[in-house]
Length: 247
Length: 134
Image 1 (tube, rainbow over the protein chains, first blue to last red):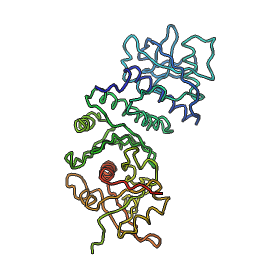
Image 2: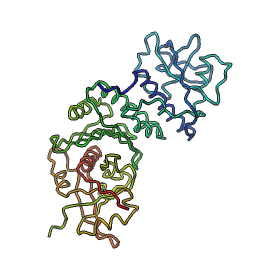
Image 3: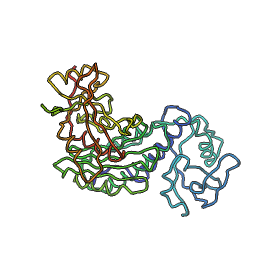
Image 4: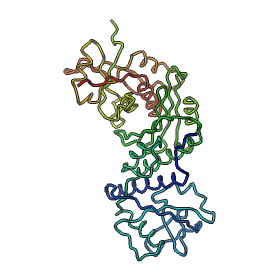
């Protein structure tokens, strides 16, 4: 089995960093600089309330957590991935990045995180590729996505990556072709798994109901033409289909 | 003589249009610009028909259209993609010369973008990359 990712947690962490970048670049237009400083906290979730922290920050229920006695953090602002956690359970692991220019060493950990969230529009974050394993087939594609200014498309693309990673990691195919992403003239994003005889593509549109997948092959692989919607459907079918052809 | 030659040429204008280091044509080369819709609602991807031996050098000379080389596509492949009965009709092709380019034509994409992207991917998969020599 290919060792595509160091661990599931590493995967989550990179997902989060990529989302941070998207949010920061959308708000500030800034580029990433310096080295990343990533913190990992075990957070006790609060549950289904919708609190507001000290008048600073509105936090939706799915993203509310707790460090020690402190409340934290609107991760769903930047990380749709959080919905994959069972946030009703007693604890989850969140990741957060140190706020380079706002960091106050006098603050407690939870306040550091809250400061980070409230100042995300002013963040200068570091290059996410530093965390990407060398054999990661999504590396170059992720860089493209991380530079998108359209947050909706970036979030949808990250969801596709996440699911792709999951499916590819579970596969037994050696020498998977790299996954590539491209930004088209109309602002949509094309994510493709390109091999010599087939192409599996995911097109992520501003209107998610227009997002779609396709699988095309040449005569050596039965000249397949297939496509479908991905707005509400899982991509497992086309991915497994493509993996079967690659195998 | 058939109105159309056996080969059409698509200029590769963007770096993304070629997958390196494999040197294969990317789907982006054939996906039309969806921002620009024709009056009948269709979309187009510009090509040059290889009417003669000069068509390739002519297209290469227009560097703004072929900075990263050319994709050569057999017309039978266009016909094949036109002939699918299991999906709605998605492509046509046309000759549309202009005063500065007698070879000019278009692949015309019709209908649902989902099928358009799929067919564009098939065209890219089956096209051959012609690199620049300069």
